[in-house]
Image 1 (tube, rainbow, N blue to C red):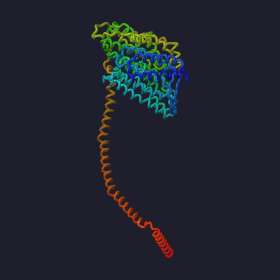
Image 2 (image 1 turned 135 degrees about the vertical axis):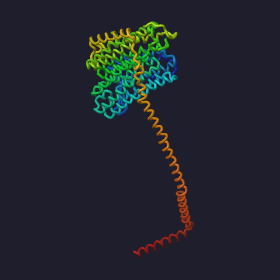
Image 3 (image 1 turned 180 degrees about the vertical axis):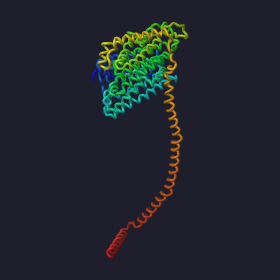
Image 4 (image 1 turned 120 degrees about the vertical axis):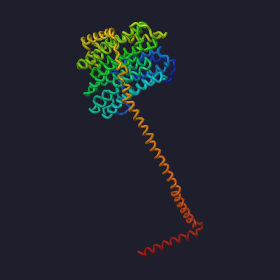
Amino acid sequence: MSWGQLALITMVAAPGAVGILLALIRTQRFAPWLPTVAAMVTTALSILIAFDQPTVSYRFMAGADFAVAIDPLAALTVPMITTVTTLVLIFSARNIRQSPARFHGLMLFFASSALLTATAASLPALLLAWELMGAASYLLIGFWWQETNRVSAGLTAFITTRSADLGLYLAAGAALGAGIGMGLSDLATAPGPWRHVMTAGIIIAALGKAAQLPFSFWLSGAMQGPSPVSALLHSAAMVAMGGYLLLRMQPLLASTAWAGPTTAGFGLLSAVLLGIVALGQRDFKQLLAASTAAQLGLVIFAAGLGAVSAGATHLVAHGAVKAMLFLVAGIWLTLLRTQKLSELQGAAHRFRLVGVTATIALLSLAGVAPLALWATKDAVLGAALETSAWWYAGAMVAVVLSAAYAGKIVWLIWRRAAPTHNPSSKTVTAAEQIPLTVFAVGAVVLGVLALPPIHGQLTDAMGGFGAPSVIELVSSAVIAAAILLLMLRIRIPEPRWARSWLGLEATTHTVVVRPTLAIANGLAWFDDHVLDRAVQAAAIRSRIIAQAVARADDGVVDGAVNALTGRVRWLGQVARKPQTGAIHHYFVQVVTVLTIGVVAWALYVWMW
């Protein structure tokens, strides 16, 4: 085994092992320094193996390998996951005071499952990682388990994503049926019908995990979790893995005529509608959640168009930007005891470092040049323009919306206003300032991934479209600046019809949950009143039959057996009477038997 393979195994498994140990032992002595050190080591390993790009495969059954690998896409994504994990754990060292060992242990375990997802090269590895990631997300969203609303939010997220996850099992079953093996790179070679089934299953699973329409509502409830959880799960890990899976499976999407346009359509629809949802929110974390799903819509849109490099660079840059904004939400919730937008007016003046870093991230989210998401969004827009003017127009609407809701927050936090609440006496600690500063740097410089010549190299390695044109870059920068200035001058729109996340949760309860419960109640009634009664009636009849058989056994069978044994006993007694023990009696008996035999023989001869 090479050092690269050993480093790959260690990077994926070590955080999970340390996390399980911390979560089970729950001793506060090792938290938070041990998980932070483990995350730092994992980050260093992820950067090293990005250059070596090793593969590890283990065959546990015929035609099914458990394989993990670092390819160009994983080499770009894995360091993003490990870096965000490290910075979030540093932030959590002072921010999470309740059960820190359990919290940091679960965060490490989740990071391990996300790394396994990003490096999975076969369906068995992907299925295991997908399951572990979903279970860990439930435990982290409902971390404060004493509050039932948080546990309920975690359960909603778990059940919703689990329902979509069935698509992966459908894809695995189709791969077995096609007999092509379980490697992800082999799926595009499957025969027509099986390939279509696999493609549909993977698209459904990815849309559910990425909180795309129609599964988006679970992300709204997931904001009940601690802010560091949102910073990891909903920026660089779980939600991002839905978009990442479709980028990874782009050859499979391209092998069918319908999968690419369908994926692009779902992504663009989510980017536009959820951008409107973000614009209508009055809660900071809810706005960030809707924005996350909308930005992931652009990643999935790029995957559908075949622009893997554009989608990957946007995924990485967005992870840094959104992780910082969720941490900012946590700081303001701690310091100002609110996350309502109306009560965050002037917050940037009161906490300058937090306000400046948040502004950098928001301007990047808006697409302001020369920040990170300005270039990565343009890479997606350039791919759309090369495909269709209609795709480009739809993507431009999504980009304009992102500038609108980002500008909405920027002007709000810098607008001076009298405080309407009692602030906390706490201050921003160094452990909280360091991650914000690093993320702010990422929000500035990560855009180089989408600019020549780096983007050209990524395109050669991953496939897709080239870097955006100069005209496209300039025009999008002008549009973003114009939208920001417009947000300063006009009343910020807040469409009420979109505030409740398009009513998706209520619709799901009406269309899915209530009919399912009605069917379950009907089946329960059928079980209680039909099946149970039938079983009870059968048991009564069986008892009656058993009693009749018992009587027959006692009165007939036992009587016949007793009579037979009496006759056998009598015959035995008769047979014992000649047994006198005198030798001359035996001679007489022998002579008598011989005489009878001779007479019988003589009669037989005479008659015939």
